[in-house]
Image (cartoon, rainbow, N blue to C red; front, side):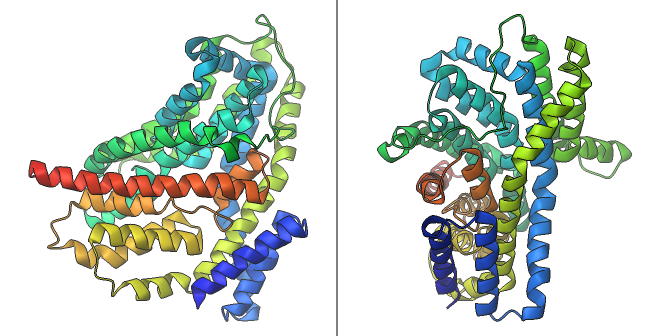
Length: 445
């Protein structure tokens, strides 16, 4: 049974990494090969499947993570990150630093991919940890939870947007309804989870090489205006492209240009060029100093990218093994509420495959025939599928490894923290969707 294979593979992976202390990159590749053999994939095809999985995952994330890490390190080594962190502390106070991270993350995360927003904001979180002496998870976890919620629940992120097209739902209405679910659910979990005893017991250190170790005097740091301008520059470009895409239809050179500039790699490349000048020659730092900051960030990212790539290989083996088709065949005959079925199918696919995008696309195809004549709001169906796809993030999810590596956690610790919060968010999301569908019925909408 394919789901049994998935369960055993996860247990083997945990054994290799926890008991045998095998490197995550090697362990993921070894388990991926084993799963491919058990699933009956021809041996001759396995290397290509692994390469495609690694290439697809690293191709999607390397530019974003690499450029984002360089921007963050340049800002950290110049004192710009400390300037922003200090102003956040002045505005909110040390007691409300988590609220500052939630507000910042939700505003930025509405239109930005989880990975992109994470890379942009995490240097600020690291600096806040160093300045305040707080636990890394106390500051960083609210950021991650808020970003996860925005990315998984709401368009224009790719999963919800693809499902909206399948269900012929209004993207604008889906976003409007989704905000009423995502904001309170995300804020509640973001502020609750760092206070749980099993989370407070963890005390990870900031990974070396990703943030400046020095502290700056007020005179040494660049001004707040330039610091914020560089930090928000890629956010404005990416958000502007997303809003333009939603508001304007057609094919014109202008729209293509906006889409190009607003793509994450190009926006971050432009931000890096701006950061090199603004926090280099403009304030008297030599280009060689700035180049050293970029090199330090790249070296620190090497193992993180390898592990994320291996996670992509594991995911691709599961997809090629036909597990999504098996789950689709099993759930086709279930006779339950379309909203609950949509959520359940997305959850099962997420657990089995790790890919939220594959989960939402497949789940929407399973429940689409049930939508016609059901009287269920297509926008609520989109949200049901989308919030189901966040559940049970674990070792076959490349985002899990990004979270683990940046917060310097063991595999078991990352499962305790990330797998638990993503699952609770999915359950709260389902409750919110059911309540929203009931409210729409009462209002006759």
